[in-house]
Image (cartoon, rainbow, N blue to C red; front, side, top):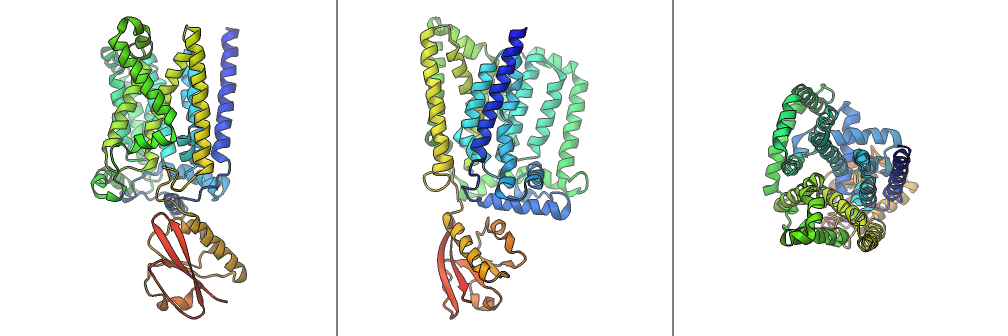
Length: 492
């Protein structure tokens, strides 16, 4: 007993150390990448919470209120700087290993530690944990739901039903893509089997399910209505899913080929794809030569419900997201999560093999995988945090916007009450960076500066707006991947 307690204590210590390492990677030089336009928009929505006292959810904005309330709490604690704005995503990424703690009691501490190491070091998870968008929080509650479902299947304890419904409420309240997640988890559940016993025990826990479901529904309504203060939130919530589905056909600017996510992973996390191919190949060969690889097939598939669950979850969610035309880089988190958990179990099995030769080779492969992951994480998060060399950098803010802000700051020292007009269409995240000059900032798309030039000191216009007037100088800036500007400064 003492040995087990000592082992658990050391496992928790190592888990805490890995989370600290993840914290360093997620907070180090957090401002090295300027805000994406979506991060700027999310900051604007936080302001609406301050104005109204709740988040006025609109189905046209696609994403639910839960993330905004969490982020508003973080900015209340840490301020509205980039660190405070991104902290909700940082925290979400750090909590992923916590969801795996139930595996400790099943004598799977090594698995938890390997999975946690890959999650904390993953260039994909580090990248989007340093991003003020919904996805990191969304995959956190996805994992919570997945673990709750699996452990109820294993242990039949009511606490996992309550946890599952709590996670479901947050999932629905965060993003409309919960439909894809639930479908993929359902496919995973189908591979768990033991259907008769499952239905029998579900009937036996009918009262628990009813209470959990009721709490889930009330929680969703509570979140969408701003603590029951805004009844329109329910109506907007019901309109969200049809609007989101229609977006797949209408939003051509985000359409990408089937292989988009596979190509992104091949560039950013090639080790994961290589190990996945090895895993699938071994499973396939084990069915062709059952006598030689029978133990491997049983241990890692036919008699391992968690691996079957993960494999079905990953394959189904990969196929759905790849088949859907609408694609953005951050959605890849939904694919990489089950993939990392699956590969982690594969590595755990190999380094625990009976054969010393297999253990040594597997240990070397595991170390190489970790080193490759660390190298990739630094490359895509610190060496090239945005720009053409980073496949996760998507219609991103360019250095030109930062140079524009520096030039405005220099001018503001000469004239503190600087009046600025933002006259371009794709201006996010400029409102965030220009908030220090409020209320002297206006937003209006114009083509003839003569009509308003007497009221402003800086005119941020589209690059195609050519204007020549005495007392003004102009300068070109590439603000983002989708917006270039010719900005005019009044000479003082």
